[in-house]
Amino acid sequence: MEEDTRTRSQRITLPSVLVGVGLGGLFDGIVLHQILQWHHMLTSTANYPATTVHGLEVNTLWDGIFHAATYVFVTVGVLMLLSRIREDGTVWSWRTLLGWTLVGWGLFNLVEGIIDHHILRIHHVRAGPDQLAYDLAFLAIGALLVLTGWWMARTDEGGVSVPRRSRLDGDVSSF
Image (cartoon, rainbow, N blue to C red; front, side, top):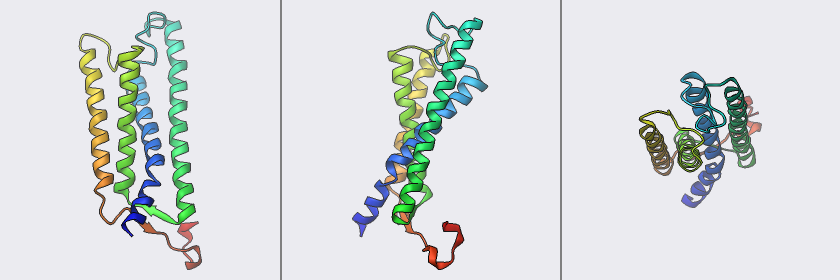
């Protein structure tokens, strides 16, 4: 029985991680790109600084492409979750779902931070004299999200999955 519960929990790992990657990207794009305006996708490149109209236009385009990609991650993850609920009639605890979603968000921070901030250097969390501190803090938050989410999902006792009521029971909320 424990193996059955573990197998069902594993069925939401990938979709929840995809949702987390998308939500992490949307948060980054909305808060850091748009609200705080700390950076855009290409602001650390010589050709597209945010201080020129052309640079801002190019950055805005690439911010939009970035947002579209993160939206796709959320959509695919949600559709996968819905599909898996329909396949085996199982719903999962919030702790497991939130845990794997936090893992995805943290993975977004780690991958985006390492690739864009450190390897490609196309932008930094916040350019300026303390940019390395901001970039490292972004990575530290990502690692903390991964560890916290993994711990939440792996220590969820008894709440990993609950059989859904049959449609024949007259429960219209299952439709």
